[in-house]
Length: 251
Image 1 (cartoon, helix red, strand yellow):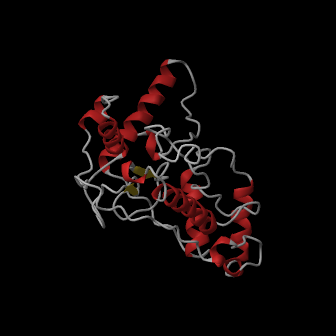
Image 2 (image 1 turned 90 degrees about the vertical axis):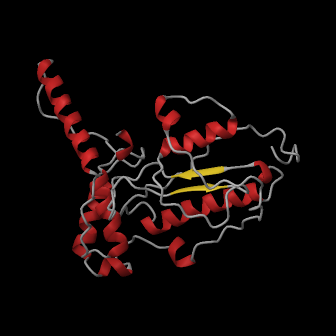
């Protein structure tokens, strides 16, 4: 598109891009390691930013980067906390914000840039990111950094360095991974997958800390579970609730 129209005039005002492999495949004999897949995903994001920053549309662009979800992973503050990036010549250089933002905060900023009305009450009242500049002072181009070769080519084959530490546990986790559904990003139990990822990175003998969940969120989850159970009883169905594909972004 940019080649056909070097002015960038033919580029849509809004585009959505998704890079896969961000959930990783745990300890799967048929996949790369979690480290390798995360590095691959990060490099893809870097190459995308590099391409935009070296194109005619860079001076008029804003790239919002968020994870699909936080996967209910361990965090010392809250398991729903995740990273987010806003990349633009109009963002003040070196800005690091600890202010509370969420997905709809990003959505509200996109709507403001597009001069579009809020889609729901949630983005209408969401906090907007306050790191914008009035002129594109942060105009420097970006060059993606290639991950270390040993990370990219890291193998999960039995006998790899971290497998030797506890081959029995390694084989057990591989058997669990072999039974998982990798066709869909959110098909697997996030707690089981996170434990597998944690051990593949921190050591097979390590123990993943329990996710810390905000009490308000925990109470909402409890109420939703109880409401579902009551609805099933009212409908004459079994009170047994099947395992869901729940992730934190369902809340």
